[in-house]
Each structure stands twice: as structure tokens, then as C-alpha cells.
Length: 415
Image (cartoon, rainbow, N blue to C red; front, side):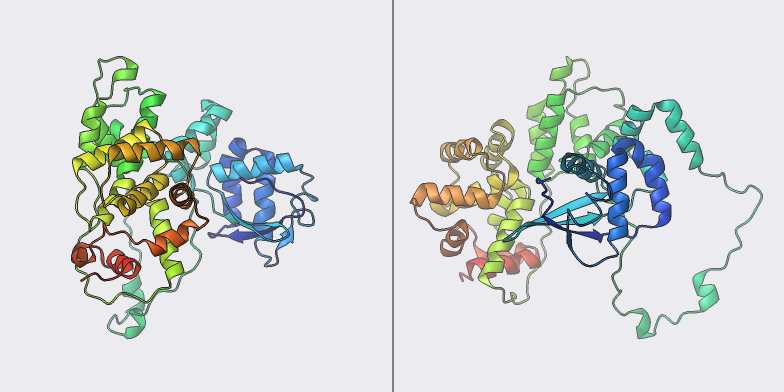
């Protein structure tokens, strides 16, 4: 998290429904992991989430009532973020920083004891015997043997007329009892679970192997479960620990399992969207899409050439360039190099971005355009003024409707 000063403003907002029973779960299952400071902060924020007015850290309950130092507060917030009980949102304002602390309910006991990250950490701090004692508190009762379920159903009691339009009106949104997702670059639990299901419970992978597997999964947009299935076919169990994964075979398998976007017909008229929002949408796509999927979109949802995918592998796996920066680099090169992804040119630019420590697409675009033109135009201006010729919008019938409309509006209809 960013450093917090006593004069900085904050608000507490509930992002899911949090009940008094949830606090009992936090005490039993989360407190041994996050510690007393984090627990006190969570309780204080839950109580404060019912108050709409923002306040400063100095005058709110966090520093004064809890008697926490800024260091203790920072550690507590990070612990809450790590276990999915809290998300921090930040905005820089003229006189101070503004933080929103979004609160989530804890996982229910069943989900907690099925989560290898949370359960493993609880075992680490308490030991197996104490964890089993806590588990007894939430142990599922056996079914009532010899008894039949004779409960009434909804339709049986209320006799609803589903032809009545009242039942087909749009649903209303409200807070749900939804736990926050633990943020990891790769869902190791899903990956490990898939390997276990395929009979590889005992296989050990090195830290380097896990990091590379995560990188391939991110590059190709493959989830943890599917990656477990792919890796299981690339293992040599008799090889030394650091040589058990056949990465050449893994790369080929990933290329064959790329998740391409659905190809639905786009017949609607593109929505009228301001250029600023289009630029923001493009940057959002760059920051969130796996590079292989983004290149696929730039090619009218046509599968990229193997040579181009191999180049993406080099940029991501060998050079360690983050995915958003890869997307920005690809977009930039296609705009400035006659739609050709030259390996030497891309690797030279990638090395420059790696040295600069670039993490986001906007920063990458800004550095690339400045290095080329030595002008003071922001990246957004370049995106607006030099639309990519690599996107042939007459082929957008094969794109997802929303993406097709977006691309037509951004780059224009070139029929």
C-alpha cells in the first residue's frame, strides 16, 4: 500500500454484506493469521462503514482510538489485503491523499478449510492439533438417518404465476455475502488441485518452475486448473527437481490452448463514445488482457503466427516484461513499423522498457512515443492521432460484438 499520513482522508465502504457472525469467523479463523492490529482495524472499519462522511486518519478512529503507529497501521492493512478482507483504493488530491478501504466478508468455514493458502497459513501459526480443534467447531453434522425431507417448496406454497410480467422484470442489485478474492498472480490452489486430481500429488516443482508456469499462464490467459492439466503432460518425474518440466512441450501446448474470443456476428451500430473514453478503454484492454489475446484482437480475432507468439514468449518469459507493457509495445510497433513485428526491434524496445521498470501500458506508450519523437505529447495523444493500420475493421463480423463496436469507433470504419 501507499504510505499514509495522519492528514490523509479515508472512507470505509462495505463491498459485501458483513454480519456479526462473520466477526466470529474472523476471530476464530483469521485472527491467528493477521494478528491483533489488523483485527482491530477491521472491526473499526466495519463499524465506520455505516458512516458516510470521509474523515482524516488523524481524527478518525484508526490512529487515535486504536493507539496505532503509522507503521502498525500499514502492516495491519497489508495483512487484511493479503487475506481478502480488504481492498484499498487510492486517489491523489490537491492537498492530501484520499483512500477508500473496501471491506469484504470472510470466507465461510467450509470455504476457508478448503483454501490451501489460508488453511496452510493457519497450520503454520497454530499447528495441526489446534487447527483440528477449531475445525471441530464447524464440523458438518451427518444427515438425519431414517428421516425423510418433507419440507414445502416455494411454488407449492406461493403458487406464482410466471406468465405475470412482475416475475420477468430486471433484478435489483444489492450487497452480497461475498468474500474478497485473495490476489495472486496465479491461482496455485487450482493448479495444484488439477495436478492432484491427475495423480501427481507427490510431484515437487522448484520455485523457478512455478514462476515460469505462472508466466506462461498469464501470457496465454490460461487459468490455474487448465494449466495443471497442461503441465501434467509435460512432466518427467524421474528427472532432477529443476528439470522436471519440458518447457518446449509446455510452450507448444499453451499455444494450442489459447483462449480466443467467441466469434459472434456484429450487426449493431457502434455506440457513440468520446475519444477520451475510447483511449481509456484501449489502455484498460492493454492492462488486463493476456498478450496473445490482445494480439489476436489486433488481427481481427485471427490466430497469431507462431513466430509472433514465440516473440511474445521471449518478451514475457526470457526478458520478464509485464503483460500490459508487452501489449503496449506490440501496439506501438504495429503502428510505427508497417504492421510488422520485427523480433530484433521488439526485443530492443523491450530491453529499454525493462530497464526503465515499466509496469503499465500507459507508461510504456509514453516512454516509447517520447523516445521516438522526443516531443512532449502524452501517450494518449499518440494513440488518438496515429490509429493502428493493423486492425482491418471490415473483418469485425468475426469479433465479439462489444469489442468490434469499440474497435470500429476507435479506429474508424475503413470500408
